[in-house]
Image 1 (cartoon, rainbow, N blue to C red):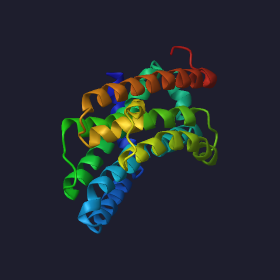
Image 2: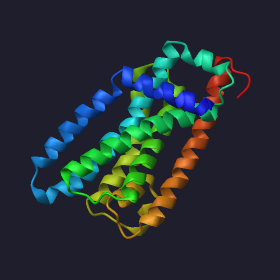
Image 3: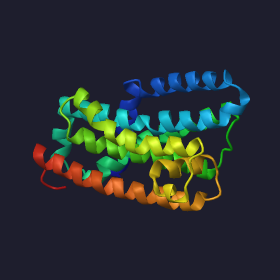
Length: 227
């Protein structure tokens, strides 16, 4: 029940502060850009845009949300409430993940360049959760937006570069253990989608466990007792 109320509150917050509007603007822009490209480029362009926007943007939105909650002392209230740290994390990941799925589905459907499947949807959701969990960990230790942005650069490079290399043809089998590459394989409905799904779930669980430890420590510093 607490998770449901947290999720409802996060969705209202994101709507109130224009997150949905921003996603809509990005979606229209990307769809227009895809249609302006030669047809041979559209599949890769669509997957790359889905990876870089609805999936990866969760990292930045998560940072903005957590830093806002810090500045408004929302976290002080949460830390001394019965809310568990894992409930706080799941609410954030699910709320941003759902938006990412809708945006990715819209871009993929309107572009008609990719095959929409359950693996495609799960790839977007899981990748969004992964980026959001990373963003949550970084934001929990950041004191300013500039500091947060600088701190996310290594994570972006580590996740993005192998994934883009895979998309454009560099595909050694061992690279599938990389979470960004697994997301690409799922969105392309490749031959190893089941393995890619399992790998991405593993990375998500690992990221959530690390985020839980970080958030738990953050709540303790703020003044929480029951975590």
